[in-house]
Length: 203
Image 1: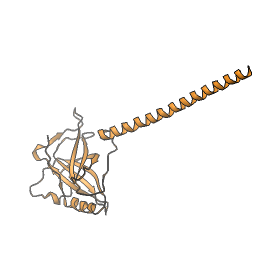
Image 2 (image 1 turned 30 degrees about the horizontal axis):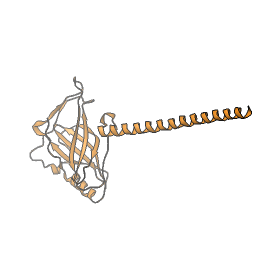
Image 3 (image 1 turned 135 degrees about the vertical axis):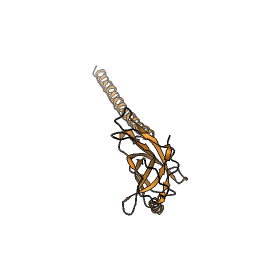
Image 4 (image 1 turned 60 degrees about the horizontal axis):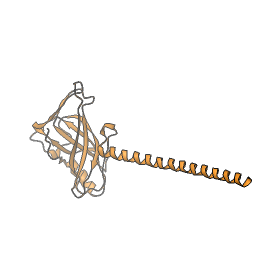
């Protein structure tokens, strides 16, 4: 299993975070998977792109635990329509500069020799990785992301929330229909009593 360790912020990421700490929006845009080794003479803080990008990953969910200063970002990596396999060795998380709207590499991590192999889709295996990235957001108040609209990226939390919403709607609809039935039954009974009373009076 790949061992990525902590995600280190780039200088661009630190600049975006500094703006977010002043009240601007920190918006994560996407993540990329690659198979490049990090050269010994490269400082992660100076990076603007991952070493050897191979596959974009969808952002499925994000949560920010209180008082910790980090965000947990759930990303999805699949081999759908992937023609050539690669070693899943590096991850880059990108964010938007709130002033310019430009996208920059926010954080980076590399698993080195512990990389996992992601096969191409032409093989017998359909592969679907779902994992969490932990990244520093400090005390930024406005943190968001561009989330995937892929149904496969729906999380258990989102699925449970949607199920609860549907069940609530069904219960409300059931209550409404039951009230209509009760009202009709009551009206029918009252109408029958009125007719019975009229016949008794006429008799």
